[in-house]
Image 1 (cartoon, one colour):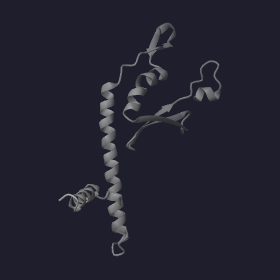
Image 2 (cartoon, rainbow, N blue to C red):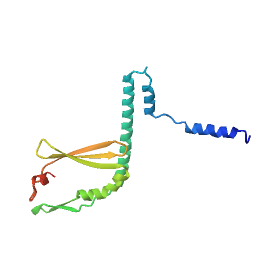
Image 3 (cartoon, rainbow, N blue to C red):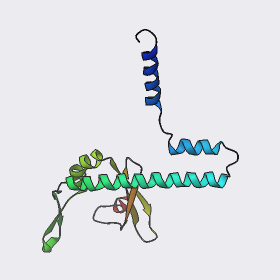
Image 4 (cartoon, rainbow, N blue to C red):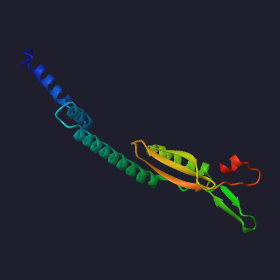
Length: 160
């Protein structure tokens, strides 16, 4: 009946039902951790399980977006030319060509590239590319790079 508060109580009841949300796995683990009767090794095992589940979900998101990005990757034009002397020349895609062609697709699917360089036990360096996804998963690829002591290069430039 209007004015007796019944409708108002129904609305409040519906709002409480809508606000009821399932706890996250970490909230459940935190609740278990507050119970002193639960052994710490079981809590540690639960946290490890949660971390593995999150890592697997992150990897699945990475793989899904990687596959979708590959479908959109353009063919990279080869603007670089390596002069081989009497053997002619070889066209190649420069890093700048590759970056210009693929960066928009990469970032559109949540990927970012980072590079690092470390000395090798051989003469040269190991360059590492890390491809990281917004979900947290990443993969790395490494390549051994010999110094290129071409004409006019100092040792630092040859290493680079």
